[in-house]
Length: 171
Image (cartoon, rainbow, N blue to C red):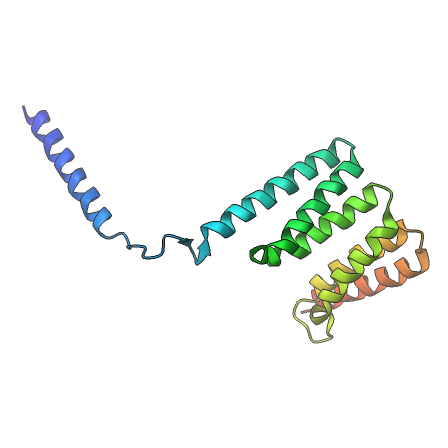
């Protein structure tokens, strides 16, 4: 009997807590907004983009570099078409660039990594707190240059990256 009463009290208490918790939930006036100000549309687009990139990554791992490059290029076209995906462009450009290198198209990768380095220009300023970001871009550019046969240019870029990594460590 005591056990049955304890169970009844526990169930009643649990129901009360659930009812109180449901009452405290915020009411969403905008059904488009999901969380942190990100719309359902943006989340869906990002899911599609992530799936496309994941498929391209798998294709690349299977040794089909040219097919992977085509998939990365499609992902880049999606990013450029959809303003909600604009912040993903650098990530996708990096994938395209490395895909080009894997597909023995390093000369196509050089302008990609040059553009990425240019977009990191503010990180390359002498007083920047993000010099390692600049150095990462310089290193990727150096890799593309060397892969394309420009060893002198690649070495110069790699030396700049090394210097920026050293400066970043001292901060």
